Image (cartoon, rainbow, N blue to C red; front, side, top):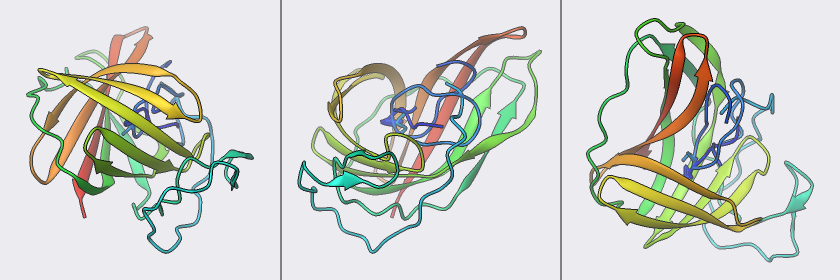
Length: 200
């Protein structure tokens, strides 16, 4: 599935959202997450780490569009898990500069909701100030996001390849952060997707 955040997941709108900041469909993550349901994309091969931005005319092999950066996806493929409980409360904090790999994706389905695995996700995010470079195994495969924090909320606006805006809540420490994304509703009620990223 596409990571909204960004997570920032673009990610990561139906049942679950993925990694990095925009909504997506439940299933294979295409990205903090990116912050929806998965899009069935397969994971892209990792390359040598390179955080420099790519030429805007470069082609992103994962979706045939413009590459927004040349960041290597160094994350491991994560199995998304559904948990029948309410999500934790976002605590806010400060996003520290650095490179982060997705280390967990949990879909909180409510106390009467379904449980068990629900696809996979693989996302890497590099933070520099309020700019988030995102690479994931979905479509689009790369994104550049501008993030504005207010309390426990973050507004993530794509600056490449489009201008999609996502509002999320988050908890951040000096070594990791979690973004909480609206995963839509199903028969059991509202769903919240929590994407965890750990500093490398």
